[in-house]
Image: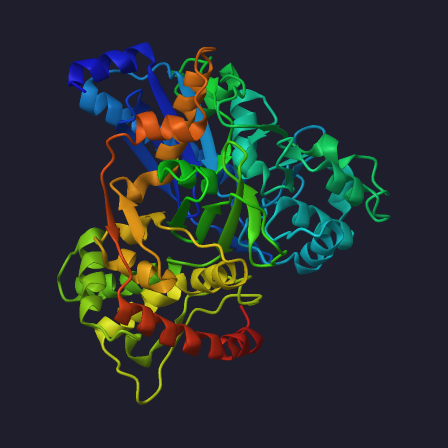
Amino acid sequence: METSQIKEKISNGQVSLGIELGSTRIKAVLVTDDFTTIASGDFTWENELVNNIWTYSVSNIWKGIQSSYQKMVQKVKADYGVELTKIGVIGVSAMMHGYMAFDKDGKLLVPFRTWRNNITEQAADELTKLFDFNIPQRWSIAHLYQAILNQETHVKNVDFMTTLAGYVHWKLSGEKVVGIGDASGIFPIDATTKTYSAAMIDKFEAQSNVQQYFWNLKDILPEIKVAGEAAGNLTAEGANLLDPNGTLQAGSLMAPPEGDAGTGMVSTNAVRERTGNISAGTSAFSMIVLDQPMDSVHKDIDMVTTPDGAPVAMVHTNNCSSDINAWVGLFGEFAQEIGIDLKPDDLYGALFNSTERADDNAGDLLSYAYLSGENITKMPEGRPMFVRTPNSHFNLANFMKAHLYSAFAPLKIGNDILTNDEHIKADVFIAQGGLFKTPKIGQQVLADALDTPITVMSNAGEGGPWGMAILGLYTLAKSTASNTENLADYLDNHVFANSESETVTPNADGVKGYNEFIDSYKKGLEVEKAAVDAIEL
């Protein structure tokens, strides 16, 4: 698209804004109606461990949103000489799950409890048994029920509970809604009605410890919207929250707010049955859109949905790239000490590329990248740890490969359950995330780990907020009564019609080496558990 055309679209508000609040970064991405990113801005943040609860403060939520938005606006002005005053459609996505509970006056009752907390084991186990449906610890209903089991005083005052994306959307639009993908991390979904499971709500409310409260669960949950449905409009108050400078006009159409899993599916074109996608960042997850129900309930397999409500088997891990980032930062400090200033991409590239000289089993080195607890390996807390024996082949190449292997290890363990127990396996996974910015290295490790081809698209590093902007454009398209395309067809026919991608296939020696690593990794989990028991935070 010519610059003059882009300027005209910006002036006319023919743009879609996707905002995603990820674990380490908040990003705002502005996209034209031909799906091209024309400007972006971001804000780096990190969760805090406060009173043994992983959380983000409300003030930091809005500081991050406003900062990323302003950087994006400045980029628009610098590149196109146009003031951004109106936006056709806005969508908000965020890290899924967690717990945000409010009283009748809209006051947050307890600090936001993120997906990273492993503090709801009793509730998750009891609800899984009650529903005969896996309830992970990070789901909102597990947090609510654990608060009930703990007899926390705030529970009696709960008037509304939602996710982070749902909260931001509510403040921008006044609408207490969530997209169905995000809703599937709050409470189980009925695939037929595409609403919360009425039967499970009844079972929950029949519990004696729940009946002591005057609220009803169905009344405090946000309303569900599916992809393409309108979810309100940007209010004047919301416009001022997003842009305190007062330049942005109210009235933008709002798309249903989604979780980062949903935007990951959209940005990798993986919403059709039998497609799979993987997102790798601070946490990691893989998703396969199912064409038939699973045979059994598995504690390590979450049942969620696509943004248009199709059932998805999800493997979610709490840890992925954080420990790698910490080690790369250490190597960066060393480079600076000897007078070499390396850009992050160059530093990551050099360290990742060194693994091409590594042994297939990473030289019998072991790494546990547990900054926090890990559900799949039953680890209650995190103690990042590197282990070697006197006979290990200890060099830089194997050191970095062990950390890449470790980043995907819980994901491998979870996917083995799907493959071995349910005979569910994707033909190919489409992957996205910062780990894939260095060409082919992380992609090959993941292909070997899962023994499955891995495709990376050209937008691999920036998928989430772009995916949310695409969902916004789909909402805009569906606002025209004549548009009857489902989401999968819309993505195939329009968004990804001319997409660029690269696929790597598993290497037999790499698969064998990774399996040797994972066998040692599983045996060494006892050491990680001992570290958790022996070393206090």
